Length: 421
Ligand SMILES: Nc1ncnc2c1ncn2[C@@H]1O[C@H](COP(=O)(O)OS(=O)(=O)O)[C@@H](OP(=O)(O)O)[C@H]1O
Image (cartoon, rainbow, N blue to C red):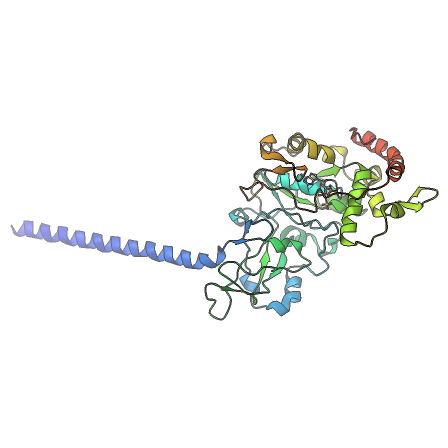
């Protein structure tokens, strides 16, 4: 009897200890949950960028939070960016939603193994956006301009700080929707990635604004087997770029999107005209002497199209096998076909196929059914595929004659007839 009472007592004690233990563990789970919910709250407010509605996240830099908005310049220096960084010469603000996702917390920042080096107005943005759909490609959305404009910032800037920029929340807003315009004008990439900052001394919920400055870290981190990419179309025509890149890595794969140089020149002119409405006519800029019809090769819109000359400069450092020449025309008429070539060249599985594209009648261009970071179809923005001004057929013919020998040379050098003549 005494023994059985003892046994009962022991069992009861055992049960009590068990329930205490489970209460203890339940409390731990609840506290952990509450802790993560509360601390994660500020980091995960999705904010939709105005033009596209893509949610984006910003990496907040607590170590720099002591600086205030008036210290913008100081902060810029801290991240190795200065106000000279932008505006981008191409004004290529058609970046996609950016590679900002949880994937950015993994892997490491590497120098690009592949660069789209040109050509301006060739279709470089379309190619980059199409490639970003591929799970093994991670690309910086903005044009870094390292090998032409920011070389003196050093390699470490290029690898690790590349793409970072200032973001200031300049106005108040409510409920996860800050009044945007939250960007430093020179740093186009931040315009699309805003995050509400709890505002006020108590950082109360539902009130956001002014006093914080945040950073977006655009240079993607890549995992083993993923390719880091960037595109800066002006590299192709920058004399110093090949040697500089060669000194960094002779194995970099180089992609050049080329387009009929006559159409390219008109496209280039259209872009400049959109920013400078008072620009002289195409004809007056294209000819050095309009009576003699001498082409002005000092005009960049003309000079960029002399592809053979620029390629010669690159071939001094890189063998032809390191290049892939993508047809800007075929990228429009057969995007999947051109993407197959690109993926093969990069040693990637052919993931981006015709299933990813649809032809948008209104836009007049192929668009992505599911761009990276979104499940909604998306075309490139207004500055891509815009109407060109009418140029007299004689002027275009003269320009075509001018380019013909250079085109022939280019076909010979690349072993590819692009059919522009
Ligand atoms: N899918 C799709 N959608 C829209 N536009 C497309 C597409 N594919 C190629 N293109 C052509 O890309 C031209 C712009 O070239 P880039 O992106 O290289 O321009 S930039 O140098 O980065 O400014 C742009 O030139 P314009 O037509 O003169 O605007 C387009 O013709």
